[in-house]
Length: 272
Image (cartoon, rainbow, N blue to C red; front, top):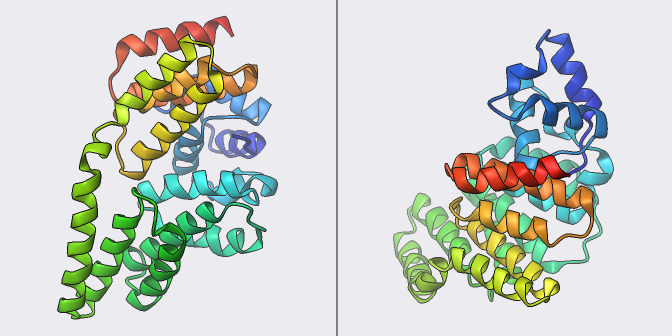
């Protein structure tokens, strides 16, 4: 992802910190690339911002923050980190300026806004409003619909509307039971993607990787993400994109202690 690498470099140098200070986040060579080439893996960038006390909106170019897919990726990662004030700031400052082409992205961002209002600001009135708006976009999405219903149920419970809360909790549970098997199939996306890639159908393989990554992120599971990012990387023709995906794969391989895959990733990165 595009990043204002010069800001990271400036803040690091102002603090008198050598690159190897951040080796727990990324290797010094990767940090140098971020600072010089203005490109880096999203999770690494967010970790660097936290370490250097950089506001997220300063770390990314405005053009990136005003792109619906990029904003969704950033907001989703901050949502998973429970950085609710940052989620609301980015949505208020940049999300409202975007002309959206994808209604699904609108629904996802409304869900994240609702969740941030509920658990960050404890504002159940706003949370209900945004959960209801999100539901109009996501009522047929198997992964998000029960999450929205649970959000509404939590709001009603907080407002002492116990009967209403129970109805929404039960609806969410019914949907979750139906999709329980599907949630356990995250790693199978990887095998399906490999199947199509081996048979020359890169487009289908890429779609399956994207769907698998999104599925695991949305249910807050990291296991298997390293394999999906790796498979997505090796079928890319664009070298720069391949490198960024490999770095994402490396991040999750570290997180999940997948040492065998990490060795393969490092070999690929070295060859590039």
